[in-house]
Structures are given as structure tokens and as C-alpha cells.
Length: 197
Image 1 (cartoon, rainbow, N blue to C red):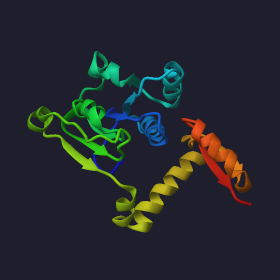
Image 2 (image 1 turned 90 degrees about the vertical axis):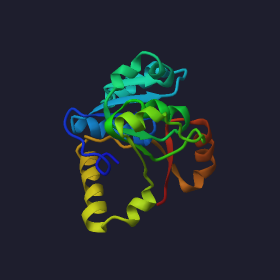
Image 3 (image 1 turned 60 degrees about the vertical axis):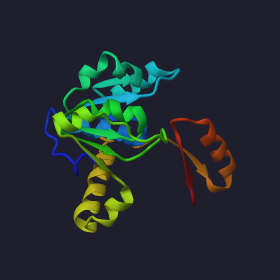
Image 4 (image 1 turned 135 degrees about the vertical axis):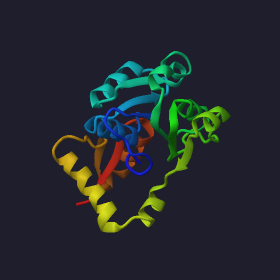
């Protein structure tokens, strides 16, 4: 998504919601590696300060709640070339108002289960674009060797050299599936991984 919709350059700005998701964490790290600034939006929560610290350690430039973005913090997200939306609803509206002239908002999820809300002004006065992204469609329209393998090789190389941290996981043997499901239902950030030997 970082390379397919906008030609991002050093110093450009990406704004995203769902920044604490696995995709959001990868976006933060990749942007940091490529010298692209990020403003990251998360939901308010009990452990907000710890989450902000964690995302900044990954390379986030700024982390705000939706409430903070509606108030004073939106100025720090002005003129973003790219917005990544995985939430929808009013959260998408916040992102769309941060876009620069000819900016693009890419929607790849709808966690709020609400329609995207976008004001008319940015369409008329900034000529913004709204795009959708689905991995199945991306796979179907890409050259296997040229695009997909190149992307996976680049990401694997970054992980191998410690430049991209994969998502946190709890590992379980397949016979411990009940414990894994209980953990998955009680955990908000850590994913469950089954190991088959």
C-alpha cells in the first residue's frame, strides 16, 4: 500500500488509523526506514501511554487518539500525501481532512463496521482520491515474480536483519488449541500461532 498509490518521497507524511494493528506497526517501521513521517491514530484506552511509547519505539513520529485529532493535534497531520484507513466511520473523516492537495486515502479495512464519512470540501478544494485495497485483488493483478516475490524478499530481508519486527505471537502446539483460543479471546494485541511438527 505504501508503494502502489502514491510515489512517496523522503520527508513525506503518511497518516493512518488503527496504528496499533499489525499492519499499522509495519507501516510505522517501513516509513521510518524510508524516512517518511507518520502520524498515527489509535483509540483511547487504559494503557494509552504504554501504547504510545511502544509505537514511538517502532518509529512513529506522532501518536494521537481520535479525540486528540479532532481537537488540536490535527495540525501535525496536515498535508499528508497518503492516508491509510482500516477503521471507517468518523475516523476516516479525520484522515481525509489531513490530506494534501491530490492526496490519496486508501481503505483496507472497516473495523468500525460503519460507512466511510468524508466531507465534501477536500474533494472540491484539494481534489483528493479515495481508493480501496484488498490483498486478494492485489495478488490477482500482480506479476508473481516481479511484484509479489520482490515484495516478500524485501520484507524477509528486513526481518532477517532486524530492521522490521514481525508481530508479537504466542506459539502453541496444535494439540493445545483450546488454550490458544482462550488466549486469543482474552488478548488484544498478541496473535496466536499454531506450530505443527
